[in-house]
Image (tube, rainbow, N blue to C red; front, side):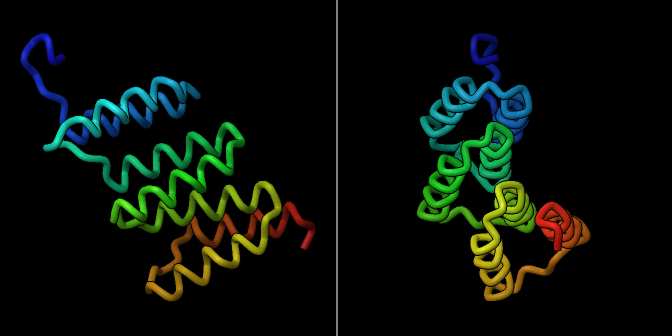
Length: 131
């Protein structure tokens, strides 16, 4: 694209990040994120975070996912409800109910309304636990 004089924007990068994540190509995701960070006019946003979190979750790399989330929070990128649904789903899959509770408390504290996806994610976690 750049060879043809077309500069990618945040939508382009986020689409590619999401595609690489779904294809479980974390090295390519990391490379693309570095490229994105080098451009001053095109910085990662909540969609970037969500793609990265979901990719790490799908690979079972929960610690990396948490580190990534914390880094983005320090970079002052605001999470959205999808971000929390990804975190809840990840915690539920591994049976980390304390962490799920922390995420839910954070959501409540900052007035994030639960969606149908949020409720289904929590129900799935309890179902896996046999509760």
